[in-house]
Image (cartoon, rainbow, N blue to C red; front, side):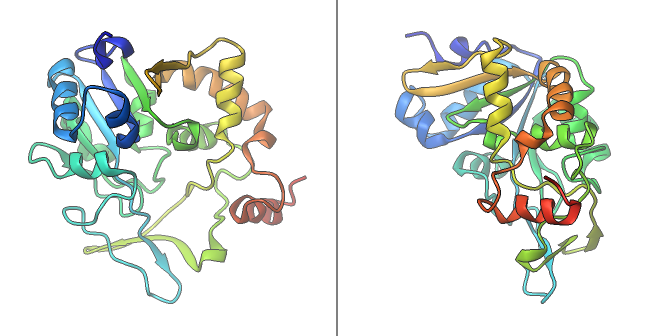
Length: 263
């Protein structure tokens, strides 16, 4: 079988946001340790390309002040084993957002100061905004589906779905604020539930806009950001009801309904 990176169609000098399950990668490919996989990606893309991985920690301020305080060099990533390995490499930069940080390598580091700690964690002035406005950007998904699609939250913001700036985490005793060792930051457009992003995934598949591929049993998507932005704007505007979980299935989505008097 051809190499995984050839199978996906990874291109040098392009920019990739990567969502992953390293267990699925290890079980189904030639890459058994994270360093082999990361170094192969770097060699293929060259430093003129970019690798971006979410290293989210969700360090929101709790009303009772029991929250952890973010420290970007030591706070572990909650978004998978591979992302935590990647963020610790000496030539990788981690952004400063206490809730939704990213680890980055390559060309993107040249502009990262402009996107380091945005007020809207996945909206305007975040790395999702940079991906949407930069040529040759892609989202690669290894062993995960659209429930992991951070760009879906950006689409919520730019399409201005009814709840795009409705804070929906009150029931968890947290506020729309984040904290690191330097201070507390007010947040807007705080991301909520992503479980129903699979409905957007199914729409794209059913209309042959994207292709689901398998390398052995590893589900792989290579998604052009421009394609997601174009079709996402229309879908999120016209079908926003499909982006919430069914009633009484998800406290976060129910909070949105309650606050906005939605259906």
